[in-house]
Length: 102
Length: 392
Image (cartoon, rainbow over all chains, first blue to last red; front, side, top):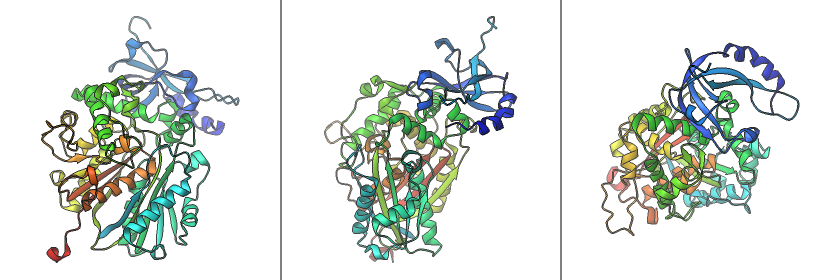
């Protein structure tokens, strides 16, 4: 149950967080997900230290080699999950940064 | 001084045939009978519950359960995620100390198995932050992040984590009210399927139904509550200062020790919040029983286990016994009932009526109840009632 109003209200916050680089300080691989995320499992959830804060986020575009403490990541905008009711919630996720490969 | 004069719990488990009303009635009637108090004497009811709203659409649980129990008294719901039970006891201690109420019933009740596991997982994430919900995290996932950090910093191993589930299942095998009575090996735990790496299924407390109740009043009788302290931290895990300790537990514990005039070395028996194996390691360290990074090995060595009567070679050096009830892992975790069940277990331990689970000579007990991934922590210290002939 995602409120479009809440998504609209949070847009500024989300935009401010895009394109920040950081480092994974803890990771897990969620194999038994909450209802809204069933079609994405298994997926990693990581704690990332950015320049000015620490966040919890889903890791996307990942391979097993990226699941290490110290892995560099960058924040990106992604669809959070499918709601099935026409509302598309966007939010912050993180993806690995590989040196020499963008 | 506020004392617990009556205590009772239902069986914990997958109780499909039993309604929340029946669970509440059984626990409260049991606690009142144990106290020898007529229900007409009860001044107020606190109900600890987390999930009836999101799962069953029922709120307003004060009058809901007061009606069922035939208690025409002021009634309140207290919610603090999995720490709801401990918080409700804390609030009741304050309500009695203030002089507003004399005799109070505190009921913790939860009905989780009526609902699909995904729905329960989603509802439980109500205890986390918005950021955590949008990341797709689950509670096993959040504790997995804590476990990963602890393993990285202190070299804590999967075997050591697994040994906590083994200990708590052994304790639960001695508890007729526990959800599980089967014992486990370290291998069983490690080979069970992964839920959120590195946490395996058998490292997680189960989804459970159950209720527990205590009767509190100012009295020289009963088991005395010598400290009741609450602390909070950020709702989300990532915003905390450290991922290898729960500062709310440390803060509540340090206040509680000061109030009670005791230290970690004086505690004979503790019921702590082992929702996942890593949580018991964190509790042991944050409550001051072990230095940071030292608890896991000590627990794996058996320093906090009940004696194993079936093992003639069991002559381990014991510090204190932790989670004799079986903890959340072995006894079950109907979330808001857990904090009250911890009290019920300590009451039995301090009265000397815990049967096969009795910790010999237990005089001082501690309960630690955690909400969310450590955003709320409640610490209670309980003392045995000394024979009045010798103390007065």
